[in-house]
Length: 113
Image (cartoon, rainbow, N blue to C red; front, side, top):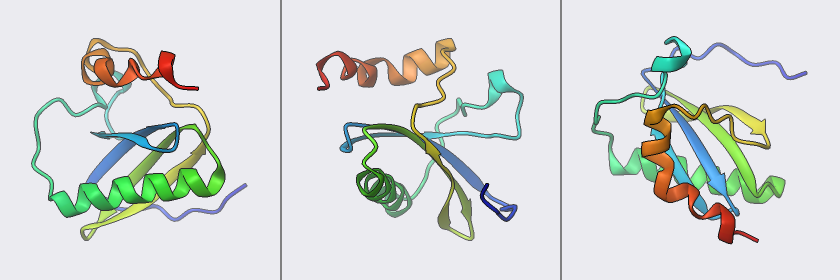
């Protein structure tokens, strides 16, 4: 069991990582019903924020030795905080939106060894 604080966030991201090197970052809203959680509109985020999230995903997955993982970040005051990081398999809900967003990226799976 892990004790966590409730993070009052302004932005939230779900990240998928394959092979400890390929990262896909998606805006996500865990407060919405399941079918609305992946944010559909194009939102502008600073490159520094997304770069920091990607760096942290890679650092975490390399440290834990995970090859296929989901990491979630809650952003508070511009700082990404890992909120979920111990899921060794991505929690994919294959809606049309997710298929469209991840379609090219998921093609990596058959070639991954």
